[in-house]
Image (cartoon, rainbow, N blue to C red; front, top):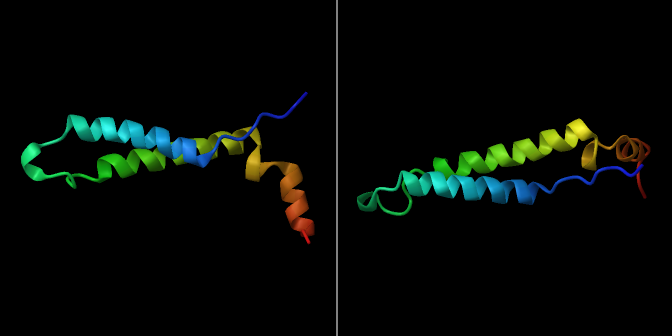
Length: 77
């Protein structure tokens, strides 16, 4: 049985950015300029990264792989 592969934080950030851009576009006010409400893009990116981190931790892959943790405790040279 092979281990599942960890999801990339970059992909989580991209999905969050895309969703945030859609939310930002729906709340866009032409007279306010392009830099209005940047939290509508930044917050979903953080949620996407957090979701990827939780998924990887729950499945024990990537940085939370027990073999990787044991190897890091012994030290790598």
